[in-house]
Length: 116
Length: 116
Image (tube, each protein chain N blue to C red):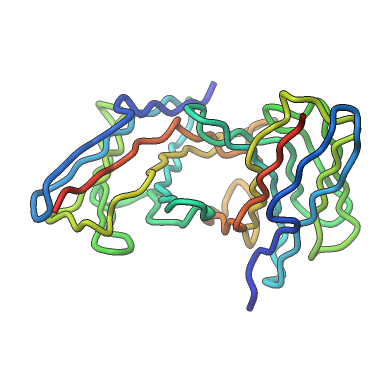
């Protein structure tokens, strides 16, 4: 298993540009999520999905869109990049995420994004 | 509201000495707690979790964590530190219901440095 994969590893954008960060997992996990990591702030949840066709907002969703058309893929779209979106982005997955199932999340290697 | 606090930005310890990385939490329902480790330029790796049962949880790489309900703490411990334990450690708590059920809330992280 490749686990959770993310592309690209690095990206530089200009303000106003759009792009999609890719995330895929080959573990047949129902739950997938996107976080951003900023120095001194830990990880903050952007969006998450509990299954194909179901997405919801996290703590910091503004400026980002997601969709989940398949179990394997969970792309994150930046609609109009801003310097405040400069960060390291992590995708994670978990087998399930219900009130009665408590699983750890598996993280991808991250995408380092710089917006100029 | 759920939250996690890691009161120490940095912990320094000599190799061979015991180490403790502190975490306190706030949650209204049952606490589901996690520790993750992040090595430089890598994604997060799961160490251990507390769901219910024994207050001492054993995890990967010789780490363990002590759950204390009265003090709302979940401190990470290791009896004998290794230089290779040097990394960034995150404590996290799962959302306890409603709109927060799908979320994982992270602390700001504690940088552990083990000196040879």
